[in-house]
Length: 319
Length: 319
Image 1 (cartoon, rainbow over the protein chains, first blue to last red):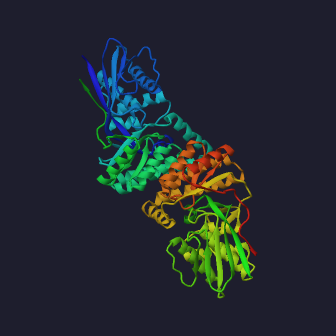
Image 2 (tube, chains in turn blue, orange):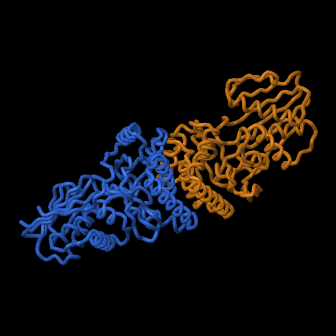
Image 3 (cartoon, each protein chain N blue to C red):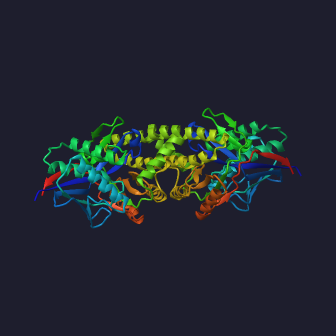
């Protein structure tokens, strides 16, 4: 039976979350955590997922009724991709993820990237990575209304990616940045956070712009430090950046306390991604501080993820 | 018996702490909390204080041996002021304060201001407020090695004072800014914090300068909002400013958590003064949010202070 699987590495944002929405640079990288999308012939359209919220459920793609808005979003992405490729013959789509959705690791984007990669392969198109990334970005934008290239491009291409102010990107040299990461439940949705940030921009345009500039400068500095493998100074930038995100209003008391306690242990951490919970990452200097970061994450009830940078993007194969 | 008392209002920093050391603007105001310095004729030099650390102790000013470095600093200020005025005849100096020292309310500066005001009055000099402020600033600088005009000038003049980038100041119109404040034990000394800030400046000169500029712009914006009595927007600036101070590295996990929890209740708070504990203040919108701020401060073990702005500086009288 004709069947294609796409494996998409999940990403973490190093610096520049939120600022990237306002045309400032950002840095993200892919990890060993992944999302797989399997596409195969079927007698009817079917969406299956054991890991993404609607546990163990099968959804008939012709009657889209689901309670969870997250699952709804997932279905929207799948449907939008099927439409994009004008798929008429029924297919079964199966999605599995090693991490929970909505934790700031780009699972939504990974669904689109996985769908585009798997479907294009399945349909016999020989898409380049750039085509997969661009198509995925268009579909994400269509469904979501707004967004940045960061997640779709990072997960398609793989590695440590620097997004410039002008929207172009640069793949940084392969660096084993020592990172410990985990995630916590979120207290606010990304949509609410984006709204909050926009409201600050409207009330305090000058201070907002200054803050965005400073965030952009932090990201540029971080890029240089990564290339130079200066992880000690990179580690200092993490809580610096977190303070700016806290000023922006996208943190919450648990993660503020976590980052602050880590700082008191001499470990540089920050929230990663949308904020208000979700992913947290620490740039560690040595195995001892990695252990400290891990212990502190666990003590805050966070789930540890495999956060070593990986350097391969999405890949597909017939199975 | 010839005896003079000086009552010095203690101050809170609204915005611009640390940035003021790097020639950026700052805003401070005087409260109903106060420190009094009483100077009277005596058969020998004697320093008494029931409230400033060395509880109930009397110190012979000729044999300065005290364990507490804080008390040591206090004695240094007293001695420096006595020297400044070439006092030869023995005096008894009695100091009382309504708040503990080293909580970011300017008790050190108040000792100098109180000594200068009381001594100048006692010795028959008719010092203007400006002369008291300048003399106090000089003595503080002499003892401490560094510092800003903020504490000595605010406490001498009284009211809401805006310190400009060029070192001059402006007394703002009388505004009843709705503020709730309290203080917690400090985890780091001011000296250690100043060193930490300087070290960040040396490691990340560009980002440091950007941060200082942004802090300065926050203070300028706050000044406009105070004049316009726009306390709702002023309240938003408090956690914004706190985030920047957290990026600077002068907060600790208790106060970061406090400010973050307050933000989740819709109350805008920040650390005030040197940081790492010490004073915390909240700009409240209404009596309900004042009550929330007070309750949260108490739940964090903070001691509430009387933080209504007052508009009279130091004053002296014969008793």
